[in-house]
Amino acid sequence: QLVNQNGQSVRLLGVDRSGAEYECVTSHQVFDGPSSAASVKTMVSWHINSVRVPLNEDCWLGINGVVTGGARYRAQIVSYVKTLESFGLYVILDLHWAAPGTYKVATQWPMADADHSPAFWRSMATTFKSDHAVIFDVFNEAFIKSWPCWRSGCQASFGLNGTNVYYRTAGMQQLVDAVRSTGATTPLMLGGLQFASDESKWRKFEPKDPDHQLVVSFHTYSWGNCNNVACWNAQIAPLAKVVPIVTGEFGEDNCIDTYDLTYMPWADQHGVSYLGWTWDATNQGWDCSGGPALIKNYGGTPTAYGVALKLHLAQLAKSSG
Image (cartoon, rainbow, N blue to C red):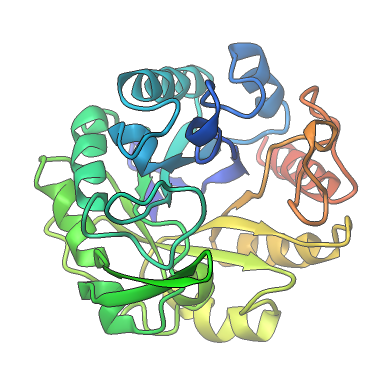
């Protein structure tokens, strides 16, 4: 279980706030939409206790010609974390986009890269190691094929603009080691294969952590892998008995809430945390099916897909008193 400073069990129930992984690459801003205290207050009205913030390693490190990177990007992320925490929220900082060498990070690659990702985590951990309301999600969604590669790194390839790019990945063990080398004891979320939806060999290939603070990161979507109760019972429920599980992303397409209304009660029953993708507005270019976006606008009006999360969290809050 995850526990708070009083030793009480805590489940993370919240939303993802997409934007800081892509806006910085080509624009003079860090966030897609508001990041003010007022905007966070609106998020809190949904009875969330956590927000996951996707990040871009090039922007954090200030490399490869991104438009908004380095000190300016880092300062805005630090400020946003403080704003979120001022409302009593836990914050998950997620390495969402990463790429090797001189390739500008503008999309998802199959796995973290050995060139920059360990440096990203050493810097991130140094910045936040005294902040105990933060969790690190060390790599968003691996879609390499091999569990040994997942743990220890390997030569991998990625098709980019019609060309296969070969590069050395950073395995989960390297990323854990990078964080721990700074003295940070922060809990670390590790998602499995198939875009963090395959956790079948997570325990077998679990990296070594001297602080024993590893968390399973699980993503589940209606169109993806492990998207039914049978799979959750077979693969996720046994893990939940021995390792904390945070569903860093979940959602569905077609602008409906049927899948969410199946997954959330199941997760409640098994003590699994979950955060809905994504707190971004359809009136600002997002889509409630392809996004999928939880809200119509930054006033917090839910989409037909987002209404399930809003109402369910309200019910949980009411039942807990």
